[in-house]
Image 1 (spheres, helix red, strand yellow):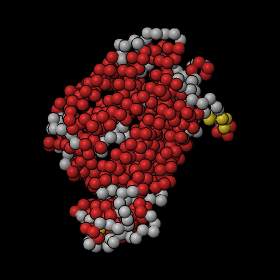
Image 2 (cartoon, one colour):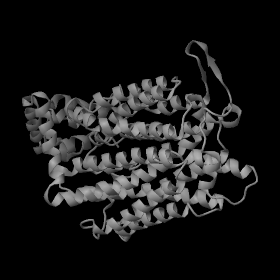
Image 3 (cartoon, one colour):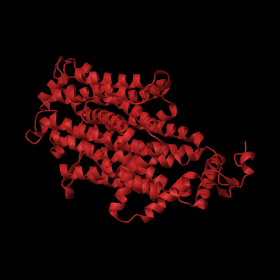
Image 4 (tube, helix red, strand yellow):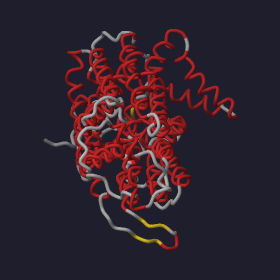
Length: 530
C-alpha cells in the first residue's frame, strides 16, 4: 500500500478540516513515539512525587529528619503541583504546549539534581518544592499536546498507549528503588561536606526519564491544533506535513493541503486572545479567572462540585498520604519479624520502633541505608494490582455501573483501614495497608463522573478544581501521618478509613450516578494516580 497517496475523498478538496488533515498524515511511527514520550512524562511525574516515599525511609539520619519532617518532605512536591497548576494551564493555552513542557522537564531535572546534594531538611524541602512546581507544568500539559496530534478516531487510542507506558513506569518504580537504594557504597564529597549515598542517586535516577523525554521533544514541533487556534494556518499545515514525513518517510510526496478550514473553536480562541490582550493588570486577570471558575460554585453546579471535590480529597488523602509511609512502616514490620516476634499490630511496632528522634541515637542503631527486599516485592505487587485493576474496571464499568464499583472500592478500602488497628498478624496487617492504599482506583471513576456531570464549557475547569482538591488531600494526608503516626497511630489509620466509608455513602448522592459509564471517559482517566 502506498502511504503517500491520501484517499480520493480528501484529495478532491483543497481546503480540509483539521481532523481530515491528520487522517491524511496517517497513524504511524510519529504517533507511537509521541505516545511513548507522553507516557514517559506521566511516569516521570509519578517517580518525582511518589519516589520520595523510598527516600524518607532511608534518609532520616543523613538529614536528621523527625517523623513530622518526613511527612512535610513527602508532601511538598504535591504542594508545588497545587500552587502552579493554574499558571501552567494559562501559559500552555496562551504561549504553547511545547513551550511549557520542554523547559519544565529540563528545570525539573536541574532542581532534582540540586536537591540530591542538600544536607538539611529546609534546603531539600525547598528544592523538592521547586521540582514539584516544574514537573506540574509538563504533566498538566502533555495530554493536550498528545491529543492535538491525533484525529478524533485515534485520540482515545493514543491516550491508552500513553497510559500503558505510564503503567509500566508505575510497575518499574519498586525495581528502580531496589536497584539503586539497596546498594552500600558511599562517596565523600569534601568541598560540599556531604557523603553521597544511594538514596541521593535515586532522586536523580527518578528524574532521568523526564530529562530524556524533554530532549526528544526539542525535535518535535508545537501542537498543530494549537498553532491553528492561534490563526497560523501555514504553520499548522507544515506540522501536518512533518507528521506525514515522519510516518511515511522523508522522500514521500507532500500532502495536497492548501488550507485548513476554520472551526468554531478557532473563533472562540480568537475571542479569548482578544480578551486577554485587553486585560491589563492583576485585578483584570483575576477577574477573568474568577469568571471561568465561579459558575462551578453556583446554582445547580454547586452540589456536583462539592461532591466530586470531597470524593477526590478523601481518595488522595488516603492513597497518596498513606503510601508515602508505606516503605518506612513495612520496613519496621520486617525488622520486628526478624527478631522472632510473631504476633503484633502495625501500631505496636510503630510505637516500639518509630517513636524516637534520629538525632538522639547512635548512627549504628538508627541509620538504615537499605530496605528489606520484602518491601520492594510488596510494592511491586501493589503496582501490578493497580495496573490490572484499571484494566478490569475499564472492562466492567459499562456492565456493572459506576456506583457499585465506587461503593465497593470506598467501603472495602475504608474497612481495611479500620481493621489495621486491630489485626495482630503482621502480614495480614500489611495486606490491609495495601488494600487501604488501593482506594486510588476511585479517583479514575470520579474523574469519569466529573466529565459527565458538567457541560463542555465547564468540564475542564471542573476536572482541574476537583484534582486540585485531591492534591490538597495528598498534602493533608502526608502531614497527618507525620504529625500523628508516632503518638496516635490508631487514629492515623482510623481517620482515612472513616473518611473513605463516608465517601462511599456520599457516592449515592451523585447526580445521575445510576447511569452506566462509557469507556472513552474511563480511558481519559486511566492515569488518575497522576
